[in-house]
Amino acid sequence: MSTTSLYRRLSRRETHSPLSGLAIVLALLAILALAYLGVEFVLRLLGRSALLVAPAQLAQAVTDAPGYPAGALIAGGIVAAVIGLILVIVAFSGSRRARHTLTSERAATVIDNEVIASALARHAAYAARISPDNTQVTVSHRRAIVRVTPASGLTVDRDAVSAAVDEQLAAYELEPSIRSRVIIESQGKVGA
Image (cartoon, rainbow, N blue to C red; front, side, top):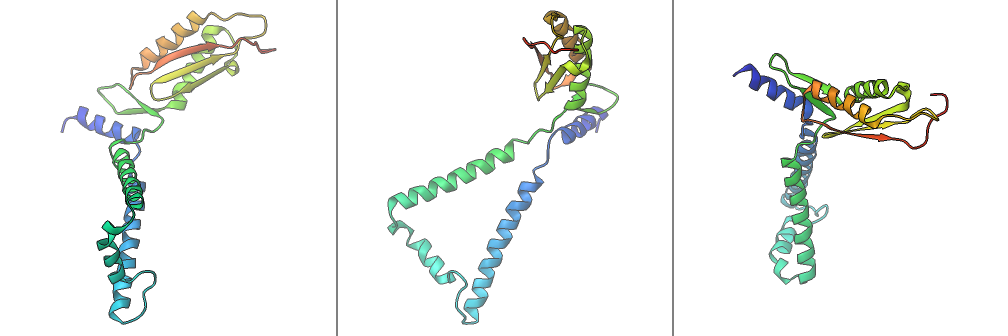
């Protein structure tokens, strides 16, 4: 296995959440259902009354299903289809963590979105010539939104801030790449 594919696999593992929680919940539900059926069968063999429904009554209810009202059957089918569709969608869409990878041939480098936001805030504040406390950056999977609050009475050059943020994002070579959006607040901040 080449180191590039190893790094790619490690990066994917760190940027995507595992679905083990859902698998555990589904396994527990299946175990509980099978344990219930097992208890009902044992109670039937011992000649005792059923906890909820006797296995023979349950089997009879399934075979009598064509005689039920059509609305109830359709509603049950829709509920089952929706649950199945949700499970299929969750299975094929791995949830993403708030992380990006840095492109590198020598190492698998994973960086948290908050670290990216902090660095972009510092560079945006420097380009706007304001205090770093007056910048707020939110980084998502594909976008960085930079909010700049100027000091009262001063103007901020949006193009300079955009250029500084875009230059930093290009230098990081993040995967997946991030586009920036700079918002200059209309209300200034006193004492900035």
